[in-house]
Image (cartoon, rainbow, N blue to C red; front, side, top):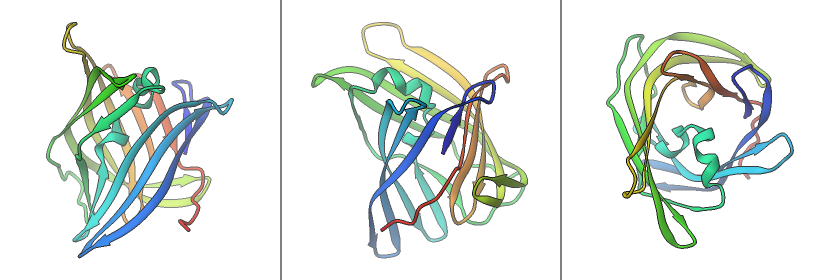
Length: 201
């Protein structure tokens, strides 16, 4: 993935490294790490996660939905999380809505608790079908929007929150090929779009 700033300028790269694929019954699980680097190749964040596919539904680890610019301050710290997934059914219809999602991760600094980070997704819905042309070709997508809230709470200072909006282009059978993050006042903050795909070995 190529990452862009609020002016559409290329600022870095977001890479998903698949480390393992396992199958349990009818469930297929892909473990991965997503790493963001700036244009100088400096790592800004690393977040582990999982994809799951079961009964025609793709489950994407909620951790990857956290705005990447919000994770940059914790790039040298340890991130711990439980499992929480965002659902993407294989079949969609325009206007379809999804249940809300809430996900919390804990950040450790030198082995000690530093803060909790919580992501809330609400009002998720399919806006329309959309054809997306990227560096990898043409993708038949579904345009999905939601409202997000990112909260930092260290337990000693008042919690701080950042409200945003997100638009995703989701290709059924593959995943998210483009995403745009906006402020609560609809100003573009950042975006990313697929650059290339390499087959898992």
